[in-house]
Amino acid sequence: MNIQENVSLRPYNTFGIDVKARYFAEVKSLDELAMVLGLESYPQKLILGGGSNMLLTADLDLLVILISLKGKEVLRQDDGHTEIRVMAGENWHDFVLWTLERDLGGLENLSLIPGSVGSAPIQNIGAYGVELKDYFVCCEVMDINSQTLHTFSLEECKFGYRDSFFKQEGKGKYVITSVTFRLTSKNHRLHTGYGTIAEELDKKEVLRPTIQDISRVVIRIRQQKLPDPATLGNSGSFFKNPVVNRHTFEKLQQIYPDIPSYKVTVDEIKIPAAWLIDSCGFKGLRQGDAGVHKHQALVLVNHGKATGKEILNLAQQIQEAVRNKFGIAIVPEVNVL
Ligand code: EPU
View 1 (cartoon, protein in one colour):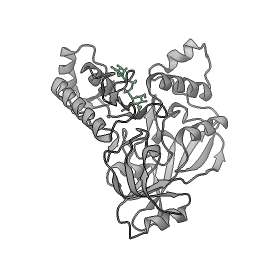
View 2: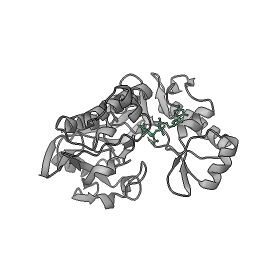
View 3: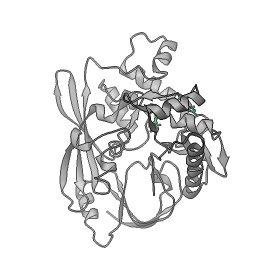
View 4: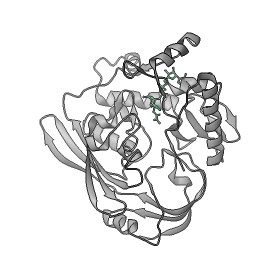
């Protein structure tokens, strides 16, 4: 395995930001990973998966380690379920398609999410009423300091809304090397309740949808709303949807009767950040090559040559406008480096 110098990270982040890594190594096996993590001559290291949830704002004077561990394995099958272990460097969407080809159910609502399998647990990816944690069994990790392997159970991962142990106490301590899922092999549980999924199925006159139908509908909805990083750089939702208490929500509702919301608990209400940003007039706005997507106000885009700093600057203007208008602090979902 060779360590390259001054490598452009443009191909490795979905925002398409052109910053350089002082040192860069691609690892294809656990032995290579242990070896490179143990190199004391490079004290500063950054682990890179699919690069789909990060905004790079400056050159990185450290060793970037690209996780290219590949492989999928059926661990066990019982009456109705199949457990699959998939290596961290596999592309998430390709893995979802692979499960659907085998008629394994669970991940269909998570079709077309950019990124790698190993990054998916870090922010507990979710879409259209399903989160990764719903089908997760465990993940294997390598301790960055000791290069020892450990297994984290569902409970130990402490999954929350776009959140996990690996974003909190475990941050910067582990590399996820593989993830194990328990999927249904029959009697699939379909999740058609979210938003326009049922509507789209009706339009196509699909009366008894299969998991493959749901995947196709999710792909269509995503393609309509969310830009493809291959043609327009982006990192999906830039901000998390904020959660406010009922009292705050009711006061806002008096001023803005059409404010959308989702109930989280009796006293917690989630408000779509997209609506807040849209209401501040940012949708479709462009400052140089940094912009807000024309179909989804929660997605910041790179029209070509935007720098990470320009995108961050736009994000800060959005945060300030939302704070001034609604008194709500919205926080980035992506990691800003
Ligand atoms: N809306 C607007 N303006 C817009 C877009 C949306 O006002 O430009 C309002 C509408 O009222 C809409 C509501 O916001 O009903 C919610 O929009 P949408 O259903 O598109 O979902 P979201 O809350 O913006 C979340 C996830 C997405 C996920 C979708 C579908 C977060 C931060 N984002 O977006 O995840 O695909 O739901 O489940 O939770 C991602 O994390 O990168 C991501 C794309």
